[in-house]
Image (cartoon, rainbow, N blue to C red):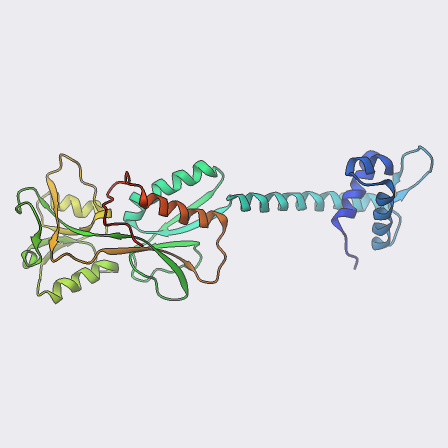
Length: 303
């Protein structure tokens, strides 16, 4: 089995195209002797002559072996050029990035991130995977957003603190903080008791507060719609809210306040991130620092 050098194949192609070693040397920026040496090395590697050399000013001609070799050489050179181009585009930030997300991040943070990423890299292939689960996995994903630290062999950074507020119809409570005990026996609409919602409900229990959950839904808009309809109260993280200035709803702080929901961005440990994934992390940090971002309060930015 012989080993081919792409430089030798490129020289073969240049000589075949130009017809003489001299013109091939000019094309490649080599000396004519360097071209002759590379063709000689190629012939040693394949064990036969690739050019008939008539001598004088007459152009060289491919031998039958040279014709076979040139056909495959051009295919290999094209693949090598495509590979080089793909690597350069990857380094520049193109390629594919797979991101695990959840509802409020999808609705509020990622639109800004995705838009800016596509403005910078229009050919970027961005895939989002949304799942409401207690046990997210980074397997098969470049990055994962989650409302809490992920267990296991991962690297992660806290993106923001997302404070909880009480959502009620206007006039239902006086202006200002509402005591936590006011939720005892109160009709409430809530998210499923997974992820950080489970922690919130443990806080209720530890404070001796037992609300009456009349409806659970993983849909943030569904929660707000049912509170708006008068079905009950809701305690929600700020990022999940979408209230209008003329809304019949308002928000109140709770007293004592619940610890905020912590949102993290994680990826597999000991894994080199692609430039595209690394840029997503940068853009996410910029997005949560933007004072114009919907739903942002001064207390939301994490360390």
